[in-house]
Image 1 (spheres, rainbow, N blue to C red):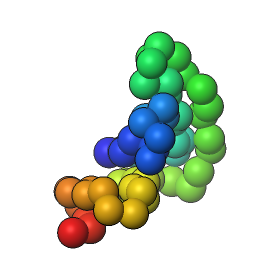
Image 2 (image 1 turned 45 degrees about the vertical axis):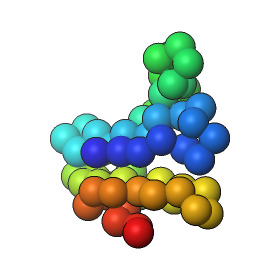
Image 3 (image 1 turned 180 degrees about the vertical axis):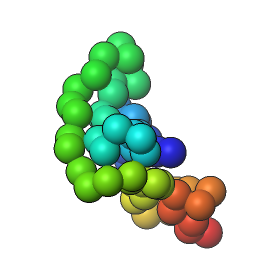
Length: 62
């Protein structure tokens, strides 16, 4: 699960079975960061810019 940053430059993904959150460049696909988190991260909410929409259970806004 994941989301794209408001500027569209970073894709954030949760590694549910790896206890990590990943940041990837949307331009190159390169891994930017691996962030250790607690056990079983399930879902990730990336808040959009005001006026944008985010649909899905990782950050439901309308």
